Length: 189
Image (tube, rainbow, N blue to C red):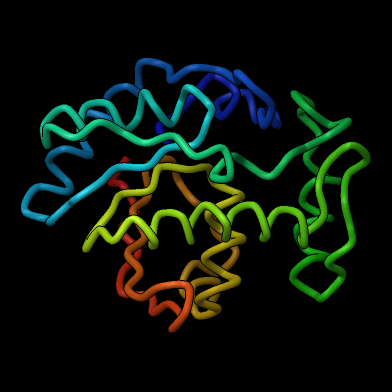
């Protein structure tokens, strides 16, 4: 999704409704129309947080497509650390997942099992809809964790760098046969 005041303030913003896009975020959403020009898009999916709807709106409008909301695409929950500027515990949990501790969680947050299950259920619903090509608008940690889970080379490509707002990651495949990472397009700004 596009940039929000929480992104600028480095706040963990994972609960509903969350902060809306700021002026830069709205510009980033508009820029996606040009960045994805010429790409076949049959459907647009968004999480249940308004900032994903705002991000998808210009592209969906240009394509004449109504975005479909799936709550399973929501950000990884920060639990007790919601709106905290201290990301230490949250990032520690995500790193623990990467080393195999799938039961790690911020108090009140979710485990890797819970996150992956809900996100993969949403992706399966998208795949079951039978579209050839879709745009899925979700959230930084959720995308980084899920893509890294299904296409481990993604972490090697991205390294320790964060995932900038409106990054476009292109995967090919499906839940049954697996996923291949085709491209990581980071925005220019």
